[in-house]
Image 1 (cartoon, rainbow, N blue to C red):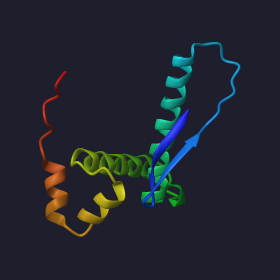
Image 2 (image 1 turned 180 degrees about the horizontal axis):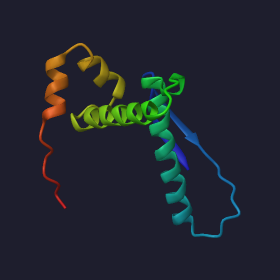
Image 3 (image 1 turned 90 degrees about the vertical axis):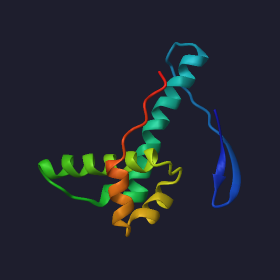
Amino acid sequence: MAAVGTRDGKTFRQTHFFLTSLRTTPETLLQLVRDRWSIESWQWIRDTQLDEDAHRYRGNGAGAMATLRTAALNLLRLAGYQSIRAGMQAVTHDITALLAMATRKPEPSSS
């Protein structure tokens, strides 16, 4: 599987190899890997942008804070921010923008 993108203004291309004993088609295996990395990329964003792994909430606090962080990330995505960092920087000190994001009506789905 090849990963292509831009990081710190530089284009990169990485090839990842996977070894498994799972008996399946290449297409199914590729989908399984993509699904797994989709989850990992969200975890990476949550930790690097929100420092989630450093928090030591206990009891209901952990679940409540995780829910709030997920809501914040989803609001930034729905507001059109491709970069979570850029979105956070744009709205962190702007209560009007935060409220606008929280109260906007979702667009109807095309399905």
